[in-house]
Image 1 (cartoon, rainbow, N blue to C red):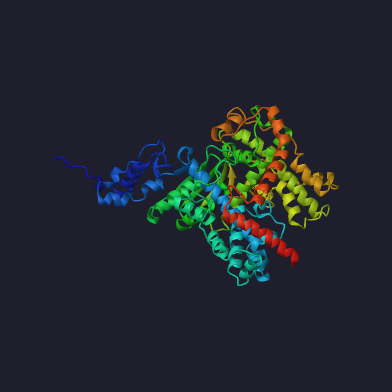
Image 2 (spheres, rainbow, N blue to C red):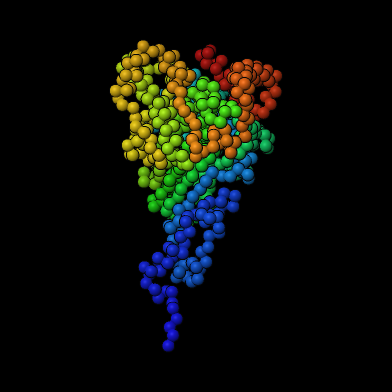
Length: 544
């Protein structure tokens, strides 16, 4: 008599192997436009077998997510450019407004306030210097993300203090400005959150901006995009906790440069890693199309007709190589700040990705990043030996550390090389300079002044070969892949350099004329009002 095969008659161990084989499709990728997952081959995910009966559905629950790695990429620009541009502009506006508000309320900080800030954010204390420009804070120790936390914390202390209304009255601020400032302060506007239309509308209402009134082409980028981490967070927010708890492995591939200080976006992953202690996230950041490309954007450089960096005038190449190291330092320090901020240590890692040319990536890393770190360590050694006095004023500290990276970066790089860091490289990162080499460098320049140390790293860095190598297109082609950047001839580039200072002076004169005439085109009524209040407050301080 023939017998019928019953799947559920198989041993559970065998059924589990079948389930695993059935759902294994080489991983999932995230489609940002549709907010859905697809197979690695960009096909729909088929889980029909799971729905054949209740027992199979129960036994297969979570198997697909536990088996397949989910990969997120930076958003493709076709459908997100306008949204991403607006989001970046609004993020910069909110931060700028908070910095200006901080300068207004500085008189309201009591000794107790400053003590509270010092206990939690000691490196933020420079901000209480009247000359401190808060938007240029990034080279004074902690990461920009920590700075933003400290700024919000400090504002929340003083805005709730009884003395604050007195300062408002003395500065001549209108009565409703406290409510407006509090609203801006408590906006849940995080750089890793993908804003909704309602979010933008709320900022427009507070600021006085008309709809679509943001200046969206300041740095001439055609293909704005959200970071892969922002896309990942958006997806995790959209699914229930019961589904998120099934996910085991995520790869976040930051394959292109994105907007909104992407180095800090992993902070938005902390709550999800705390909820799911089995989750492991590897964040990869490509050197060629992201980290190094970001350095080009920061310098606003125009590439010449030469295909490679060494075709730039030497001054421009020196600045570009310096910003390469600053970008690596930013990503590193932000990643190292995650565990103190609450990230489970085993949940996250950052990988500097040198593909498709890991050998060339290693060579540039050794030539550029190690060179700059060596000079920073030498500077700190010169201070320790008494050849130089530690800068006492904010402007000098900022001026020096703008060119000598972050204070914590040399040790962070050593930990990367030793393999003891959550930050890793998929190429050989090289070796740190020896103590003897550092001492020789300090000895050679022991008589240098601050200006000479600053000039060394601003203009006089050793030339390095920045060619991309045979496995990649030239830098100009890499730029054109993602950004709309005009590429003048070498002669035009020289003319641009000569005219930069004149253009800046003309722009400044034009802005001053507009302010005097009260035109303020493109500036919000609130922001203009706060700028005027700052001037009034500084006049008041001079009288006190």
